[in-house]
Image 1: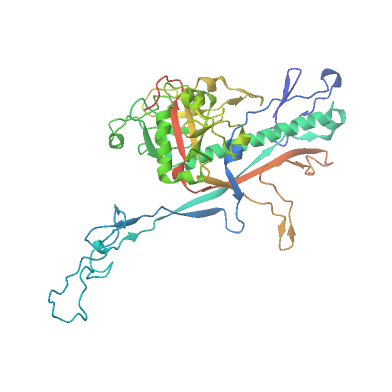
Image 2: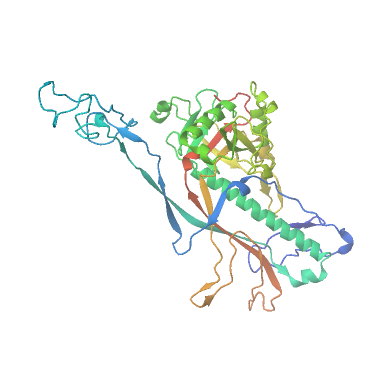
Length: 458
């Protein structure tokens, strides 16, 4: 945080021995009574990520048990157990016996004509009606992480001589609140990107979806991507597509493919809405990406004739309509990437929308507007949940100051014999902590595309 005053910028102290900054502007005749501040962009990540409490007394690392979907299977006549042949084995009831043909014989203990001469499910094969359901499980671990945000030190003398100190303090508090909100948005976006099971790389032909790693390489997270550019490798040849950096823009064909995969995977149960008996999912993308999708040749009428009502869950975010099975939720701080080389390493480096100067002034980053690559996300409420610890005030007779781990700022005035003997210096401090619980990560998709390309992906 920094405040400019007549060309001078007061920055954060680098250590406890640095002189206390003049945080509040003091000369009343040089500023007006109205205090203004620059604000940050808002995004849908705050409202749509499910939040719960992190359980106490269970350590820092927890596990969640996920049962995979189960269907009946059989394996023909082997009789050794279930296999990959899907479906129940249906048999006829009756008609399988061998009746006694002697008309004069006693009918006691004889098989009646047309009855089955064996028990259903008996014998050594599955044709007698026996099928199995096998259960597979996954154990996914997650752990707690925390971050702290502090303001510069404030001296009581700042308050004594500051002009409109109430307004200035309010602006400072609002700015810190925005910084906390931005930190949470980045946290949720990064964590969703990290645990998404599917990554789609857009090409003009042969776009492909990879599980976590892209063609066997490691997906390093939202700040850096490593893509395999060796088109002769075995991993690439088995995908049947061209590897490497994205070469095409996001397209409705790619989203249509994702949509039907989600429906078949069962993701429609907890979709963000339904229209015409079909689930509607959420696509988090930039304004430019949304515009490209809605103006793509052959798809514009989908917007013109869509008068469906938006679900109550999405309406407070300002969403007015869906487009081809997706609500477009705008995140104009969507991750963008650039590369400084044309070699074979395939590394795409994150380009931040803001930059910080040596004096701590936050400005817009011009490189963000020219970055060639961008990521969009198919957001689903069952992919993850954010668990935040509850404040603890004490235990077994011990008392502590409760800490709000959502980033609420508290005023701290910590006495020190050498640095703060009179208790006249303090600062604002906020603590953030959360654990990302992975659930049905296969419902999450990251779409990596070349935003400056005029060719839709296929």
